[in-house]
Amino acid sequence: MAKAAPRYVCQKCGAAGSKWSGRCDACGEWNSIVEETPLAQGPAGKSLGQSRGRKLVLSDLSSKEAPPPRTACKIDELDRVLGGGLVPASAVLVGGDPGIGKSTLLLQAAAAFARAGLKVVYISGEEASAQVRLRAQRLNLADAPVKLATETNLRDILTTLDEVKPDLAIIDSIQTMWADNVDSAPGSVSQVRAAAHELTAFAKRRGAAVILVGHVTKEGNLAGPRVVEHMVDTVLYFEGERGHQFRILRSVKNRFGPADEIGVFEMTGGGLAEVSNPSALFLAERGAPAPGAVVFSGIEGTRPVLTEFQALVAPSPHSQPRRSVVGWDGSRLAMILAVLESRCGIPFAGLDVYLNVAGGMRVGEPAADLAVAAALLSAREDAPLPPETVVFGEISLSGALRPVGQTENRLKEAAKLGFSTAILPSGGKARGSKAMKLTQMSDLASFVGEVFGA
Ligand code: TYD
Ligand code: MG
Image (tube, rainbow, N blue to C red; front, side, top):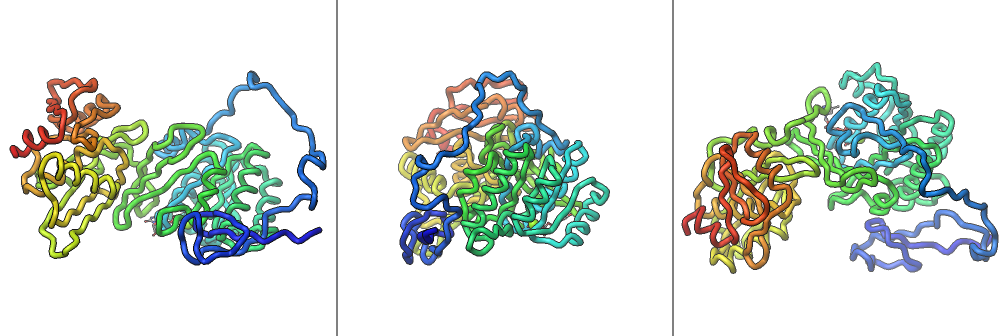
């Protein structure tokens, strides 16, 4: 058989080419291209059409078979993010920074699914059995009926899984798996891709659910392979700020449920505890109204969540003033500063701007634009917003305020937590009540005039 031509694969973005180069054309990264042997080779020299394959079994779309039942593990925050429970024959990827608590979450999930009646196998490629057992003891799960193995050889793992026939297999982590038919180091794109491919194929073949753990890189991508995200049915990210106890499990892709759903947990001495009322938690440290602090009524997935934006604006000692953002999009901040400057005549030149979302939460909704603008203005003017006020609304480049979806839910959640005034764009279907007074405006300039009297 002819030797396969080598492929050169970027370890950052997964782009493959036939030539080595110092810089990846696809993502621009330097020194990231490595020679890899192709995955598998068919009979050499023939096109696929020449040698006949096996016939497929075709079935009707209108089959009366009931959809496979989901299994809920009774950890509500996890079940919701999965779209109501675990679907058989599905592959789930759980990504997150090292040390954020993925192994802890999955050990707790393993025990919960086992108690819900599934046959669960937990395979650790990172820790020794004794370490996993020690963690289980600490989490008070030592008597859970979970089968445990420590292995990294993919061939051996698949053999075991084919024999044991679990309903759920947890692989911690995909970067430690090693396929002996692939000629590159564990953790490389080819290895990770091969392992993800084999394990998802196992899930589909055997009707078992597979959960893969993946580490993310400094840049926030799953280490190496974005490709794995395309192979699996569901992608969850486990996030949180170091130094905060809160951890957020977020679905960024889900073939069996809504994406953008979040589950909130708190890391305690005895493992992860569910937080069923995240708004109360994120606002817990709030004191008296302070300049620069604004409460935003947001929607995460199907649930309203209140968070606090905090801004600090100070004269800059640098020629290039600082713009520092935690928990919100930096380019969106630049846009809001530009709109404030050109549509409302409020300059931020020569001022350092710091923006932070309290509690380690990350907000991605454009609906938070108005809350960000309010926090920036409040910090700049050193004037707090009226007490018990929530703010939401999208800002367009023209300075107009646009109504956002789920206004009713946002107002209801705010009222539930004791807020009595909402500042929001006019239009939309908002209705005030005795408990909630509405202040509606159509553009940012009138917001500035009304709230800050400028
Ligand atoms: P871990 O699940 O090992 O993280 P990952 O698998 O994502 O790398 O969690 C690591 C951190 O969690 C570790 O720093 C200690 C902390 N932790 C607790 O605070 N309480 C606990 O009960 C456990 C098990 C871990
Ligand atoms: Mg781990």
